[in-house]
Image (cartoon, rainbow, N blue to C red; front, side, top):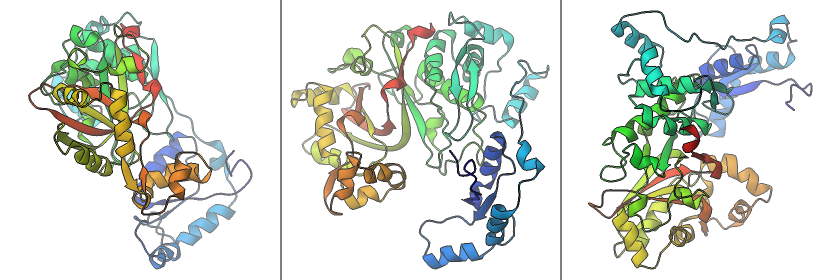
Length: 436
């Protein structure tokens, strides 16, 4: 129950850069007149004297004294506008009015329906052809998406996914994989200020059926299926969740190039280890799509060379401790670790978890760890409680074995590996076959 529901007057305080976002969120939730007050950005790395000056100063949004905004927000009675709230018509027209091709392209760009690259216009004929890639009905609901947890979910259908698949330049045979990614309920266009993205992985027979790349250039723009499936996932994450507009529904400070496309396939036939989807309970003959939240940091190396242990330890220490890694490993590299005795992914992951360490001081000096993990530590939840009790200079483990993931892919021109930030939960692997 909120403080307001308990009869406690409340004023929300934000930094001024979030004013537009706050207005959009409160309006979308039917509370356009909720009490807000603002201080300048930033509030981190400011002295107590500087922060006190914010309180005694002027609200940068309203240009009124900050404390006056707070006091009036707490004491003024609610009026008729406060109590009415707002409602919205969520329906959108299925078709646009006839226009020239150039006019429609300009319209798509102006409305933020694209990733600012040219798109294939989704005519009725093209969408109907795309829908032949699935046996599901066009009006069947696939799922719901939202850019962040405080936004409302938008429900979407098979046809709406197909529209975005057309725009991305995908082919009908790719549609089951795109529908599977959409059905995870995880947006590829998160609104986090930390500029996160989604990495997506395809396993099983569909990889070969539609010609996905798992070899040379696997993480680059060198395969039509990889590129357009990933692009479709990003486009539908814009258009089927209410947008991805900077300053409104997108707040990533730096942005992320994975927001163009980040889908690849595992080289199952060339891997000495168990495929990712089989590790997570699927049969080898099943096709799946998996998503990983993050895409923030990237470390890379070669091996296993003589100093591979030191290299991996440095890479783990340089990672974002809130985001466990996906390690994408060329088959040459994977076979090299098998020769060293790591004949399963699990054995190598166990070594990684034991060697992914930071001092407790460095571990806790992280905004996500402080915000999300410290409350759990204080409540006694392990392993965070033990990490909080450690001496500042004590080396502590930063990832659990079940958080670290390994995928084998690459063209065997170099024994390379790449470590990418990517948090995963078991329900983020879904069947592609269900969407055929």
